[in-house]
Length: 277
Image 1 (cartoon, rainbow, N blue to C red):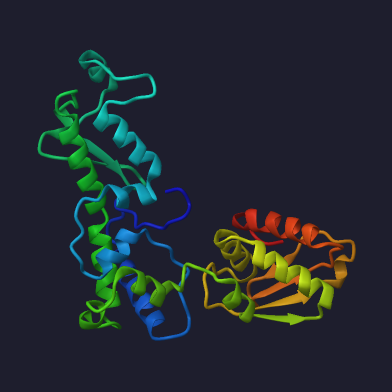
Image 2 (cartoon, one colour):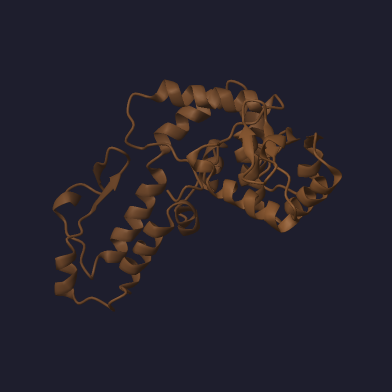
């Protein structure tokens, strides 16, 4: 919801075959060196293992932080304007329904929920049901993905893994240590001084920035991922780096200082979502 995670569309009907195919691709990644650029919330990886997953506030907050904060306000009656009285609750217009998916679909949290108002007295019951419904909303799609995954990875193997091990096997390691990143790149046509600048830039970057640089240069955001850094003689006066994700190549102009190189790299990292240039 905030751009860090992908989640299945709970209102998507008739697409079980597509989700099953996704699971097959994920299973194939387990058996190869290729990794799939997919970032699920932690609770989805857990469900893909076949693990029972109860109502977890942390799991909900991880991928829908704004909604999670709204639920806290309702549950605790702690709004920015202060606690609400009973008559103010009626003015909120909340009922025992949940709007999910794209296009939006309204689901009742219990029979007759569309005609049952949320009040000061029953608000905690509403939040309990809403949280449960949010966490169960993706179960059909997750079951289809798991069905495809089991075509390649036996359940007996999945039972030996935890959710973090499954994530790493399918999508690669979320952490990007400097040493592993440095070993993953090949340098071509770049001077020793520029190599030193680039090495210091990578050392100074946090995990998110390293992931963004990988995504800019290769289209992938995690290791393992090999890529090449080429000197860009066409931009002698500096400018911004370019990338060719088809060949996993970063074209790096020459910069007079490490600070200027870092500044240019951070610009392209921050604008990666708008495409490479």
